[in-house]
Image 1: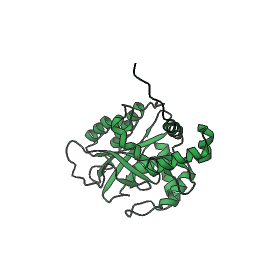
Image 2: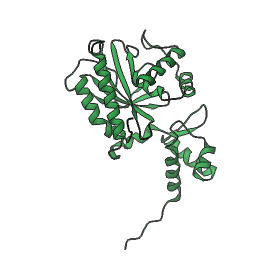
Image 3: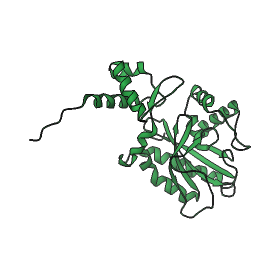
Image 4: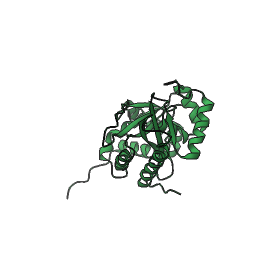
Amino acid sequence: MSEIPNKIAVIEKAVRILEFMVDYPYGISLSELESGVQLNKSTIYRILFTLKDNGYIIQNPDDAKYRIGPRFLLYQSVFDETDLARAASPELRRLAASTGDICHLVIRDHCEGVYIDKVDPPESSGIAVRSRVGARVPLHCTSVGKVLLADLSEGEVDDIIAAAGLPARTPQTITDPLRLKRELDLVRRQGYAVDDLENEENVRCVAAPIRDHVGKVVAAVSSTGTILSVTSQTMPSIICEVRHCGEQISRSLGYRIK
């Protein structure tokens, strides 16, 4: 009989901390972790320091809270079928084929969005978009960013505005906080967001939320086209297609559409 190896206590503690932090995507304090995982504060701090030093944990400089970082996406290729990128991939391809435009999958990393997938349409649309997997985008002037912001509390939105500002990317960019908040209210009510030449001139995007099994918005899916392909005539069908794509991916993550 082969010998059963001894468990490594510090790894077990690190796993316990990480699993507890999953339920706190907006951050958790050292004291809250101590109460939740029932470990010594100095032990928790040393583990967090090591994870942070290697890029797996992020600490907010404003409130000192810790949260799991996007570096874990490096291991997405070994996740199972419930992994976000795997679940989204076929739907993204279907969306690109149906709209004829470029489609993106984006998550939020504090004050920015991060592209984690990009699918070009089967036939080139001729659109040149400055996007690639791993690239970052502002939240206030992109359709995906508005979808991600709309799921946050007003206080969290205020924190992001304070940290990142509302820089004008084009003449159409929303740079007034009150106007942006009104836009986010509209996004919540209608279930999708539009970037109307706000991030890149001559480029329009439509985005919809992707929700996990408890209904939290974990990502956004979008279709990006030009002013020639995304018009007042085509916009209704594109909105329908993008929302359907977001719902299908959400279902695959365990979300039940009401």
